[in-house]
Length: 137
Image (cartoon, rainbow, N blue to C red; front, side):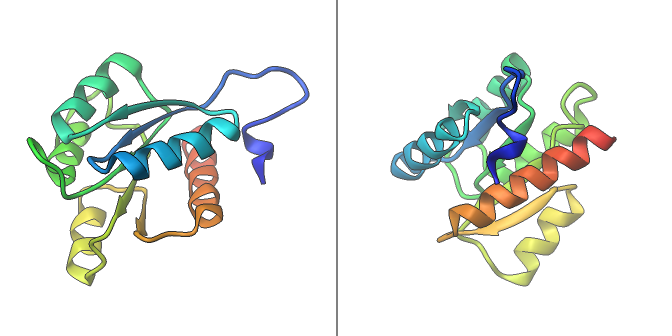
């Protein structure tokens, strides 16, 4: 499963930005992604997430919805309006699982949607699929 992230030659690491205000979740996901040979950057709210996205140009963003300062929907809206950032795949990683939440995120151009609590193998599969799709674009 980790074949996308590891190869025979030392390829450039996939850079993933995690934007979430739950420190325990962030550290767990960060640890697992680093174990999968990903480079990880983090942000605790949407404003900080936008700043990190602009500075670090991640290959993919894992984005929560409910956060202080700026929520995930506003961050996603601003990402999609920014010509230099709109191409970055975004997977919503959130506790909000109502159909209207999923529909709103889809309308904003989210790549995929994962609800908490989640299975890490499922999250990794969705990350791999999003990165493969982004390479084809």
